[in-house]
Image 1 (cartoon, rainbow, N blue to C red):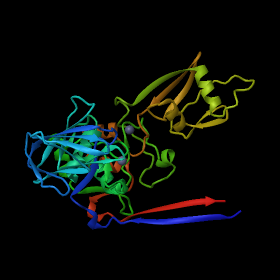
Image 2 (image 1 turned 45 degrees about the vertical axis):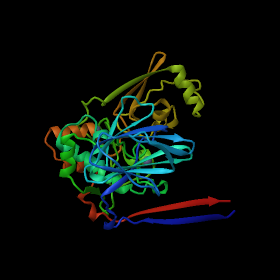
Image 3 (image 1 turned 60 degrees about the vertical axis):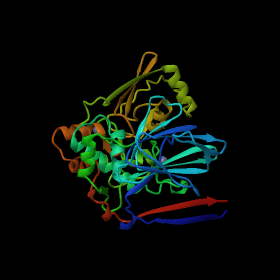
Image 4 (image 1 turned 180 degrees about the vertical axis):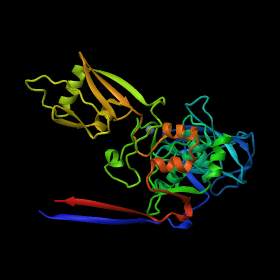
Length: 390
Ligand SMILES: [Zn+2]
Ligand SMILES: [Zn+2]
């Protein structure tokens, strides 16, 4: 038997010159819009169609596009209609704002800045927003940051969102844009006018979080760690020196610190059997398991099953829970919400309320990191190894 090991070395160059002012974000990426209305709000735009004369679009003007076979039908303010392969509504100034509404979401109108490109790809309408990077960061903080209103908390969120942006600029490059607006990348529901969020982004301008080797970190975060963050290898099988276990005294009284779920005993037993458990044998089994520190595996007798797998299968808030049998029920008593890796948002909110600065919050949750201008980031090397055997 021979083994062929094929190694592909892929070097993604992130030299100082990679910093550009704009980002291409696919918006409404989780929907399949059949039609979109664009309402120009501020600034001045040109409707740019290949080989055609640009049409001026001004505040108050409406442009409607819809799928038409595998092309895009466009309708303008003066009722002119035509079909195209692609079109760009191009912002001409520095403060061009427009609203977007997609079919099937009455009432939901999102605010965007910059330009919008629209084209059909295999029968699906693709909408790409070309927008200023810092406005994108502010939009992500507003969408992902939760209810925290302290400036130092929001600054910590801005550092995370910007670090993610630069680390993942190539995530959808093969698709012709940088990032999508869904949780696959970072949730982004358009720009924000929230003055506190805008201030947090401005006060951290160009700042990112680097590991000890000056590469951009994986800026993982979650809602609540339950009192102890998780190492990354517990969740993703890859360890990173800056994603260490941290005991968190700050989040324990927060809304997502505790949860409880009751499962009928018969359902629990049949789940364990489906997972490979042979049954309790002659001696009855309590199924009890205390997890007061994060552990990898639940054990029914000596049979192990990863807590992460149980979390996924039962759609639980976290994998940090204890199991108790009470009569014909199994009670899961859990702590925290989310994967537990990196920054704990509810803990960070409490730290900010107690006077900690954003740098201190970041350094509490990520070990040995540097907060600095993105121009100091080192190229990120991605090494992919494909093993195949015959
Ligand atoms: Zn994505
Ligand atoms: Zn926490």
